[in-house]
Image (cartoon, rainbow, N blue to C red; front, side, top):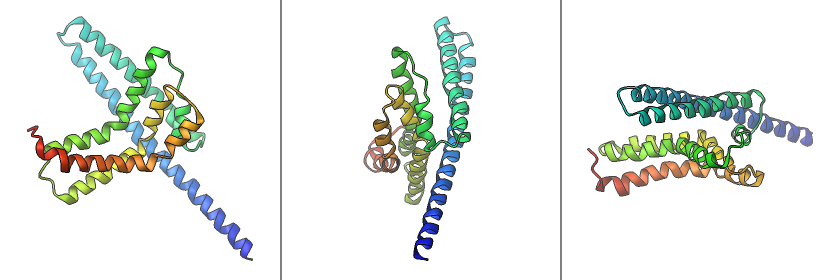
Amino acid sequence: MPRLRSDVGLEMTMTWDRTRSKIDAVVSAVVGSLIAINITMGSGAILFAFHQPYAMWQKALGVVFFVWCVLTEGWFLIMVWKTILRNEHPSAVALAMQQPRLPGVLRPVASLWWLFQFLMAVVWGMVLSMFEKDMPAWAWAIVAVFISGFAYLTFGYLLLSITAFTKRHDVMARVWGWRGRWAIAHGLIVLATKVLIAPHVDLK
């Protein structure tokens, strides 16, 4: 009987872990999809703006940026949901490992591109701390929790930034293990900016 109870408990734990992993993957995919759509639409707006009476090099730059966004974010949108449907876990690691091998000259560009998306939340929080200095402490606590949660859900972007250069399994496993700590660190960085830097900066 004790063994039977142990088996049932183990099965329940495994079921909960699978469910939690699936929820985590789907929510992360939804957040990533919204980011990808917004970036692509934003690049389209920039392309439209550059087609106003600007210099030819500015128009060309707008076209290149739009094509880059469509290719990278389109690939992300397709592959993130393919990974979910294939039930690959952790989905963020599986997605990052499928990143196409880019020519050497494009690897730093791709790495910085994914890193930019990973850092968007913490940069937004730091900028907010400079402008909204009168927000109460409880509101800043909510902001810090939100940014930590956002960084947790978008951690896959950091993995994509790494696999632009290397797909070593030991590196990926080590970085994936930092997920929770990195997410908490993002919230703490925003709070530190609010307390230590924002009082000495006036951007208004």
